[in-house]
Image 1 (cartoon, rainbow, N blue to C red):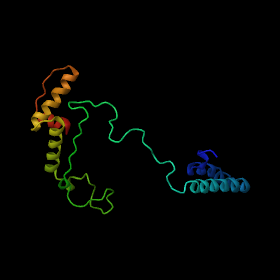
Image 2 (image 1 turned 45 degrees about the vertical axis):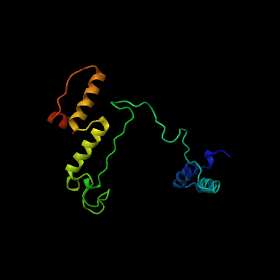
Image 3 (image 1 turned 135 degrees about the horizontal axis):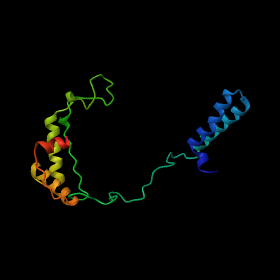
Image 4 (image 1 turned 135 degrees about the vertical axis):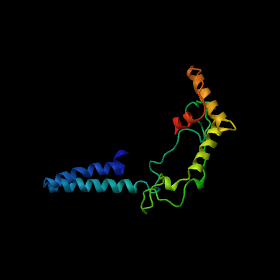
Length: 161
């Protein structure tokens, strides 16, 4: 039997004509179509007792890079976490009525600024935010062949914020 015919998705498609024919009062055709859909669904469920049908098997090795790294340090990733950056317990969907996680009342901006500063320093391989931003912008400008100097300060902060 074809593998497509054993999938639950195929059983749904075979059941759709049943509902269309029921609406048009063609009970015999609708009954056969519905019975066929139920049979296909049961076959699909019973044909794989382990429950692993259609399991994803990756073709690449674990921790192998995908693509080519670019940037000042190709392939480097900076990841920062600070549980104190968020105040209280917040639901993702505002189910408790306390507001959403992105609301200012639920965030500590100084902790978020510190996390951003750490990630930029780690990404650029520098000790200070000023040196990190300068190295990132100098690399970017040299890559574009513009060789213009960008001043660190208020403009840079608001350009990215």
